Length: 211
Image (cartoon, rainbow, N blue to C red; front, top):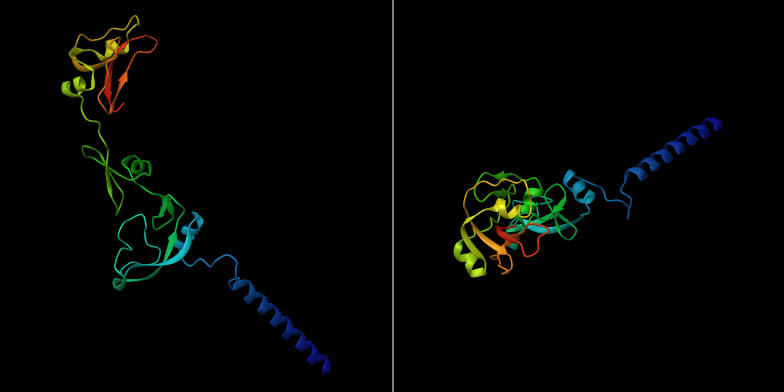
């Protein structure tokens, strides 16, 4: 009888040890890795963010999109506490992960957001701002002469681009140009650059907007 009791007690002790071990490994370890409760939280941590808490508008849920303005801009009486993602400097939480802050048309395009068929072209961040491409201003005779350039109504980009080259046939068409460079040192209006043929000293070139 004593032998049976010892055998039963041994089994019970073994079961208790196993249960304690399971509880230990399944329970959150104090000071260890945090327990991830959502995909948004996992994305925050995986992209270098840290989970915190803040006051956001009453309609906003945990982990709001901080790349957009307004989600956490309500007054205290219309706000409640939600989990937030604090991203590294220069990034914001887009609801999925920390991403680069979009602040220009070029950054919007580089991030893969849609470009609207408009003039000037516009890039729209879904649910956020729309950025317009900065199209260089057209060079006019007045802006050319004011900048110290030489305006001509019968110039040729082809002839200027290919100065000093042989075997290049340029069409006999006149085009209005703001000429630059040359011995006189003609200048271009602000926002444009002087395109000069290479390898020719004191060559005459033309101003290209936004170049």
